Amino acid sequence: MNASMKSLIVIIPVILFSCQLSPVQADRSRFKKADANGDGKLSLDEANQYELARVFKNIDINENGTVSLDEAKDVGPEYTKGVFDVYDVNTDGKVSYQEFYKVQVGKGGVKNRFNAADTDHDGFVTYPEADARVKFLDAQATGSL
Ligand SMILES: [Ca+2]
Ligand SMILES: [Ca+2]
Ligand SMILES: [Ca+2]
Image (cartoon, rainbow, N blue to C red; front, side, top):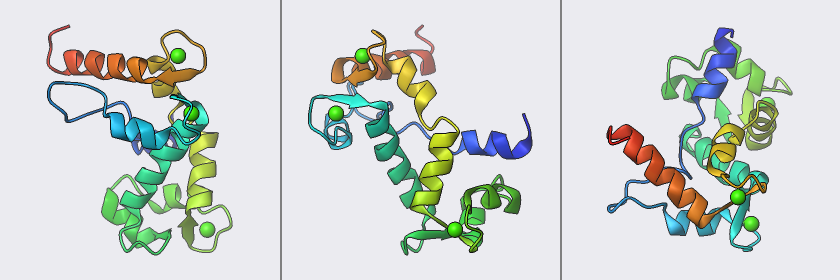
């Protein structure tokens, strides 16, 4: 795997399937917000849209709707010009959310995490599935597994 591929993967954080709540449980309000069509379960598309919007917001430090190379560099040393250029599809020197979204989804977006949470493999993550995933990850992190 080359360096820029690696960075693309690194920047996907665990937002939906993580939590800082105690006792450990999936964050129900986040789940609800991510469930754009309100059917009580998340599609991969919904998970991508929710997570990637949050990630983009974190990188767009001055909140002007695009990410400059300087903003990207502030986020971490892995954001080199080379990585930036991958995202800046129309080469105008800034990365729009649309560009960011397209590139991320093209690389799989949150797919791996989504599939890991979708334990019955029906293509949707329900709240109990998200909750079970959070508990699993927590148990793993705290060494009780
Ligand atoms: Ca839904
Ligand atoms: Ca651009
Ligand atoms: Ca499922």
